[in-house]
Amino acid sequence: MVRFYGPGILPLHAVVIFFLLVSAACTHPRNRLDVDISGVGIPPVEVKRYEEALFSVPADSLYRSLDDLASGYSFFTGSGPIDSSDWLRLKAFITDPLLRGIAADCLEAFPDLKKLEQELTLAFRYYRFHFSNAPLPVVYSFISGLDCDHPVLFTDTVLAIGLDVYLGADYEPYRSIGIPLYRLQWLRPEYMIVDAVAAMAGFRMDDSRTGSTFLDLAIFEGKLLYFMDALLPGCPDSLKMKYTRRQMNWVKNAEQDIWAFLLENEFLYSTDVEKIRKFFTDGPFTAVFSNESPARLGGWIGWQIVRSYMRNHPEVSLEDMMSTYDAQAILMKSGYKPARSSRI
Image (cartoon, rainbow, N blue to C red):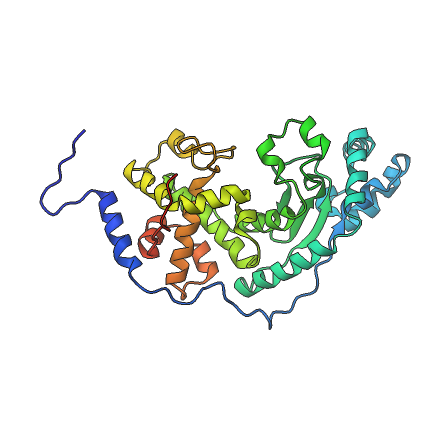
């Protein structure tokens, strides 16, 4: 269908392109992520190992040990009196042969968590720098029961990491419960810190204030990833996006073509769920491109827009950016200009 516009009137996507080209001509000030945390002191993180405490209790002594468990791990047991149903649930958990085997495997794979503790201590220092009034959480490890969809739990005072979700791509129980091959690469120890910080980012975002357009969702995901930039400045982008090296090369080489596709097909302001889903859900690839493309390209593009916005606006703090829900304003002020693409 041919569209006609009156004198001086441009279609909305043309206006967007015009402003992006104009603002991209501006010089970028210093990187907002280049911060000095030398003056930020916090106690070293010590992970409290709930799985050790729980699975070391003999089943026939569990009832007598409940008070001791509750005193140190009330996040899991609850703070109120433990009734018979709680006791039976815990007993079933610690006597399940599969879970006992998984717990033993975790204790063998992670006799200590010193590396994670060091990574969390550094991330928490950046967190305290950017969110000076936010409490630092108590950190626990636990056995999730292979809950790969929720490997990390976070509230403002607790961070809990399911160790059984990071035993390596070759860990047989993952295949036995049908985890897709493309997700197996995420089940490695190096993703613990990534998932922990991602959970912290998600906690600071309000889903109810996010609109339903492609652009709204892209900026939402981009803000989460930028939060990870701020707390994990040395972490490779491939880990944050959970892309392989080949997928990372593809998305960098295709950035301009992806952006052109979104504009030409009027994706940015679309609320078509099926249309949007193709760019935000997990999967082995993005069907509208090639089998070599990674999934979640909407989040990648949103991330690049937010990065550009923050480079151009060093006066905006991380906390202020995270609490800004006007995706259109972030795009228009970003000066985003996609990197030149090679052919997809």
